Length: 587
Ligand SMILES: Nc1ncnc2c1ncn2[C@@H]1O[C@H](COP(=O)(O)OP(=O)(O)OP(=O)(O)O)[C@@H](O)[C@H]1O
Image (cartoon, rainbow, N blue to C red; front, side):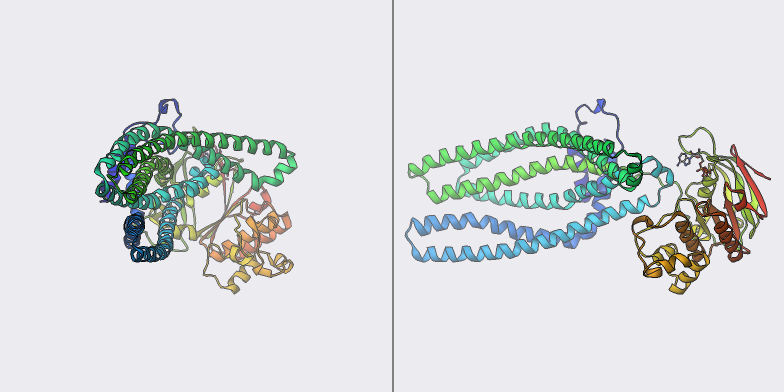
């Protein structure tokens, strides 16, 4: 069933490229490959399938709701022809009473239907978003280095919601439309088959028109989604940098940029609205013409006494009911185009290759394992020069290593390779005797704690931030790690001590305080290898010496790798390594 549906939709949308496609530079997420689309649609329906029971319930409710809607005009017809015109008071009271009951039942039904529908639709939305987010969690820093965060947000938010709207809302809308259409046609035929022909002429005309317009809708929707991503990117980029913008006196320039982006978005939105207006306007006009035709011909029959007034009123209501579903089905055809744009954009993220896969059968690691780089070469994608060129080094377990080298030479990249954010192009990295590609990623990253220059802090208390990588740590352990990392003074200053909230990204803390939080985090992680990558650059030399003494004391017997441009940080190491021009040498 799902396969049939995905094929049908693929065929509906892929029989031609959008206009001017050849003039457009290929955007990420603007794929037109039918096989790819079918795969994306199958992925989409994999979130709908687990909701089978809820779907059946909502479908059953929709059948009932459609029956209630179809009943109303029939009751009106009975009221007019058998009650009013036949002057039958009993019938009049009976039908009026029944109408009240149907109305109450309809209200209860539609409230319950809406509740079930929202629940189902929300479940699909969150499952979809979670799946994409989980995939994004596996992607390497190079992916994030190339992408605008605002664009990713726009895909995860706006595009996923657009897809969900189609996957659930539009499918139900089409189901009730088909039901309503079938019911209305049967009742119209029973009233007058001659007048029913009018609907039969309308439908092909509308289909032809919409087939022609849908390509334009797709093109303009794609452009609108891109403009929306531009706006999100702007906000994501500038809001966290407000202090810098103020210090540089560039507020007016940034406001102008926002205005400019807003104008682009608005003009694209208006273009889309114009296209959608014409898409709807022609079918709307055809409906008015056909309704007038029914009243002319049917009215003539009533005047001539060949037909009853109630039947004409009921017929024209059913005509409206038949045209409504036809239009919403054709509208669905257009909304598929909108959904496809979003599906392409989200699938493009979902299909980003994961560079470092987790091992299926991870090897055990021991805590006192030495580290070895054997002929390791690595080049960042898009760069000519390798960062590491056949690097080999052996670091015995428990040693203190000083790693230095000019800025931009690849020290942090080397650490990223240890953490498997990337895998070497050539060579192997061994922990103990195990290639780190054969370890569990989680275990590897727990065993190698990296404290870097850029400290990530989240909203939450100081304690929550310290135990981020070790959520099971007790309050006492958190307290001990904080004191060891020289955070005692900060804790004393904060109103609620360790439980004080840090605010967004810890903006109220100094650089040195943030670094000490990161060191406390690493202490709590109890790693076999600790890497301090310029981790103490934001504290004065005396505090730095104090932290390094503490680290040496606490991590005695464990491997420590210190990266710094300050010579004082690198004192008393067992091994001095210098990285330059891709080569690692002992000094
Ligand atoms: N994701 C990436 N994509 C492409 N190139 C990158 C990426 N990350 C880093 N580089 C490049 O790799 C080289 C090494 O960068 P890296 O950050 O490892 O240097 P570093 O020695 O740690 O520098 P610093 O001492 O200034 O922190 C630089 O030329 C940098 O521009």
